Image (tube, rainbow, N blue to C red; front, side, top):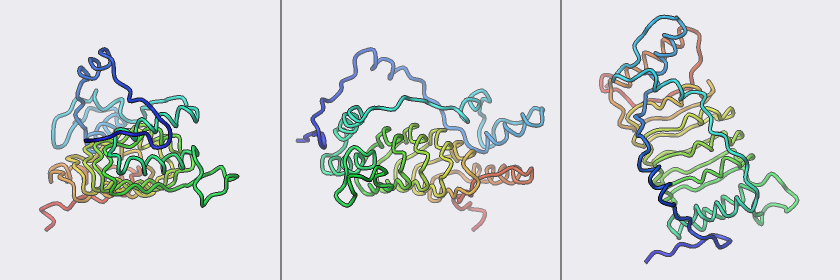
Length: 261
């Protein structure tokens, strides 16, 4: 028997109405597009000449246009709203880990003050460690953690990353290794201070296109993902073409190609 409890304050489980359920059911499925495809399209537009829109698989050019630079804006929540939202998120996780994670998240969001910090200190903790916590999601409210520099959520069961995380502008290290991820939101590229992004040992079958616009000094680890050799070779060639043209790219650590062995 599973029991769902809020971590600090009582909150009722929100139930979607029929209209919301119908809208979710009818939402179209968007096929991930590789960074190699996007680089090729960008190069073709820059030269004002037609060019291929794919390397390893055919993709419609129109599907690539809104990905880079898109932004999902949302107004900031009050402390009471944040408290309730994080409580609701905690109820979706296993109680053994949800209560602990909820407490840590509230400290990062300045909703509670840990004993080791002075009550006069407004910045709050800058690091959130939730490794091996059996989490299935990351609360989107972490986008309001203005002082968060390290988010370490490896060895969980994450299948997606909230787009709102791109609003955590102080983030320098994001560890998403050993999860169940297959793609990333474009908003991840809006983290100007990001230096380390760990994506190794997930379920990526392509190089996420969001990586294209990351800062040039960002190190991205994509090792141990089931990305086909054809895609990897295409990405290598596209990156080299971009560098030859004097354009910057983050430091991508890709899985090994069988031909290299």
